[in-house]
Image (tube, rainbow, N blue to C red; front, top):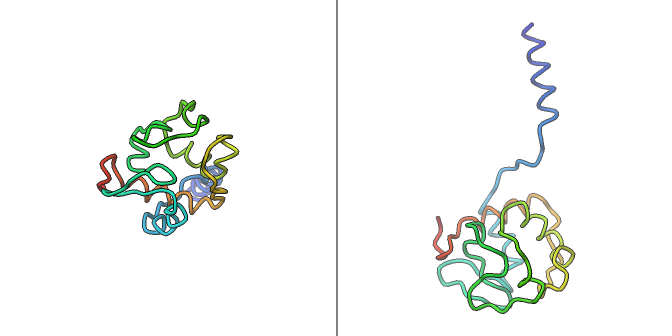
Amino acid sequence: MKHLAYAVAAGFLGFAPITAQAQDAAAGERVFLQCRACHQVGETAKNGVGPQLNGLFDGRKAGTAAAYTYSAAYKSLDKTWDETNFTTYIKDPRGVTPGTKMVFPGLKDETQITNLIAYLKQFGADGKKT
């Protein structure tokens, strides 16, 4: 009977979603080096070629970074950033938001995306690490 319980448990594990991954903020900081040419985070972050990314996952609506001039495509979005839509977006920014000014071709590696999210989630709207 004990073996049956183990077999049933193992069977259920086989159906568990594989989307849950450990997030590594330190690895995400290295991924962010690709973003840093256009975006900043932290207490001294400013808008550059792209908007600063502080507080991105704190209920921030797309196209709302103060004093940043967004494309018409971005101004028309009705999106609040979360891990799911950021993951979709960062894989293919121009495909997801045609007309965006963002020229980055996208991240395809799920681990890099997960780690980048972990890194960005550290920064509150004020740029302080939480």
